[in-house]
Image: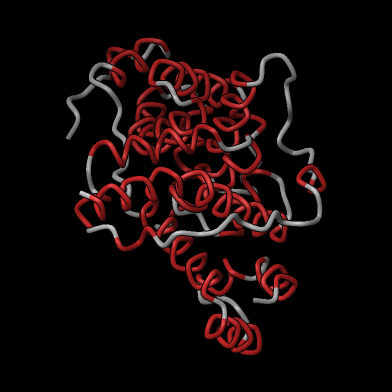
Length: 201
Length: 83
């Protein structure tokens, strides 16, 4: 049975009010929904709220799910909208509204440029470095963050990311590239300082 | 160093790193990298940034979160031990 068929059967059971099908859906998808929510909100408790809200909304709206995308994509979409609504309460945004000009046409030329790749590998694997990497995701502009988390961290394809966020493939590629440049720029002072300290030390 | 050329190539660097750039673009970027130290550093650190994020461990749900999810959805009676 293909994933698509398996999804369809589970959906039919959820629609028919079969609670065990809801539990199956949770078992299959809650880890990914939680991770996405955590990376988008930056807080465990918020991520948990987003996860609960996502499944609640999904089960309520299950009749409107048309099955054009996969169930996973649909849940990612609900979770992304829910998370971004919460982090941007003042000015709710719908991610389906695309605004590629928001960041201007020109990519800012990165500031030079110290090659911190020379740090020993173990320095990149510490809990502190990992916490810094996670923190830096939190500072990404929301539109870049959603693309980066889905494409790079959750491993969706460019096409799946585009479908989830209702964007064109080209916009996904551009935003992924901007996100990577942005993160590199933000992380460089942190790693440069460590590399210099090591050189001097 | 030709800043205009650096800027021109910047937008193609992700495609280059992902192995999705055309042969022409790859050749152009590699010619440029051979003569531009700043862009070599940029490409190295960008590649490293991408790989650090790809290797980042996946965060797990905190203890009790799954139980609270089931309870919030009125499904607590279906809560089976996590396999």
